[in-house]
Every structure is written in C-alpha cells, then in structure tokens.
Length: 369
Image (cartoon, rainbow, N blue to C red; front, side, top):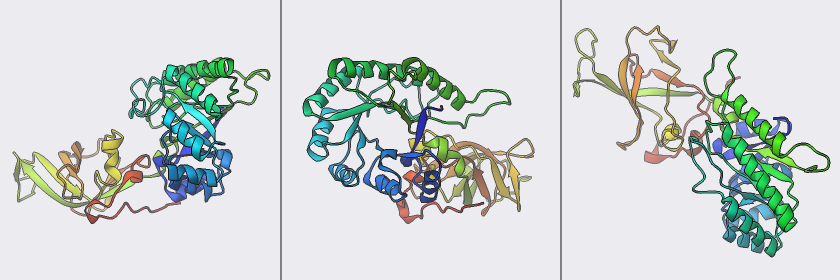
C-alpha cells in the first residue's frame, strides 16, 4: 500500500519499548485515544501532524490537553462532539467517522462509533454552520477483519461523502483514514496469499478506483491507516507457569497420579496468568489460546505429533474468581508444577487491558535480542 501512512494504534499495546522502537521507523505515526496515549507519542518527539486523536467521543480534559500541545487532527461522529470542540478547540482539524459494513470482523465497532452516510451529511452541515474545519473521512471495519472486501466498500462510501462535502458544502477534504483491522497471523501454505496481502490488494483497488492519483483531483490527498495488532502481535511470546494442578477421573480427584494405575479423565492446571491479566483477550478479543510449546522435564517440546500422551486439560487463572478460566478444551501432555506453557503472537490486546485484581502482579516482560 505505497500511498498509505501507518499510524500505530497505541491502545493495542502501549508498551514503552515497543512504541519507542516504532517511533524510529520512517513514516510512522500514532493513533491515540486519550491524554496518556497522546503524552506517550509526544514524549517520543512525534511531530504533531503524525498524531491523530482518533476517539470520536473525547473527555474535555483530554481535548484541552490536545489543544495545549497542538494536536489538531481528531475524529468526531456526533453533534454534541462538534459543539464541545467548538467551545474548547475551534481550530482543530476534524475527521468525520462513518459507520461501515464489517462483514463479520472479530470485534465490532459499528454500534458504538460512526455515523451513517445520511447522518454524516447532516453532521457536515452542522460543522459548516459552526465554522469548523473538517479535513476528511475515517472508518473502521472492525478489529481482526476477515473479509478484505470490507475495505473496498468502505472506501467507496468515503468517496461518496467526499463528493457531497465538496459539491454541497464547499469542503475540500484532504484526508482519508482507513482505520484498523489488519492482521497477518493467518496460517498459509507456501505460495498462498495471506489475509493481509488480500486486504492490501482490496485497499489498493479501492483507492485506485475511487481516489486515483490525479494532479487535477485530490492532489493534496493524504491517506493513513491505524494498524495495531499487525505491528504488536508477533513481538511478544507469553510463557505461563504451572503453580498447581488436579488430576480428575469421573469428576473425582485422583490422589495418585501414576498414569499406569489410574484412568485420567482430565487435568486441571492453575497458572500465573488469567483473564484479569494477559488472557483478558479471551473475553475482549475473542481469542482462543493455542500453545505452541511446553517446557517440561527440563526440555522445550514444540507441539507436533511427538507427544506420546495428551490429556484434556482445563487451564485456570491465578485469581479466586470462578470465572477466571482460560480454556476448558486444550489437549496437553501431563505437566508438573513448575513447568511452562508457551503461547506465541501474544502482543495484541493482551497486557494492555491487564489489572492487579486479587493483588496479583502485572505480566513481567523480558526483552531478548
């Protein structure tokens, strides 16, 4: 996507080392949703025009902070937001967020954010009446998009609103924001096209068709996107430690765990991460955790066909909440207390939403070169 500038969505994983590393990449920008995220980007000497305040419903304190630090580019999708911006930051450069069809993305946004095309036209009229500067259109097809066509049709809708703004209200839009939804974690065989490559092709087709490069038209058009998990997911691998276990047979606890003398139905493991920490993605991101390896008996064993015995395993988090169950359907070898289970690609929407519930510590991070 040679015409698209990436603005990393900090909410996906605000780890300072990750964000600092990304800030050093050429052409990178940041999608921020709060004062804290704006501060993180600004502290890395990010130019103001490389930051978009992409929360359509902003707190007044956060909006004042954006004004004080010259962050002008921000989204809206309702009239009350326009009135608030008019009173606090009338010189802001506004981007109207529209609601688009998501075609079954993992996490939907269309109910919470975005205006229909009909409502967007009315909001642009309100913006004009208030004397506010609207510079473009944004959308979000939903986090974890599975259907590349969602981007094509969303771009088509943006073209319709660009034309309305120009022809009816004399707005000359200069920004198209493609939002997020990008992933490249799908499995593929050699030679197959990845989901990300399909999404990129759909975006390129939509841009070339509806926003072609033409010196006479859209000559100042800037196109950005807000990838999150695309950058963050593969950076982190999670290792969880077994702190306790129960071996069950017909729902009764087996005191002797000798596999030769008991018929094991399932094993329940209690580990040091759960739904209130890194595995919150099970609830909020519809993740189905699948381990890639275990460290047991003093050696690392990758998941393949080499395990002689596997057992139905239930994985419990460390809190005293009965809801804190990571998985009930994993098949694992017989692990002992102190063993480790490894999960790859665990950097997106995991640690970002962790808490200290039950007084338990947040996930420790160890960087490896």
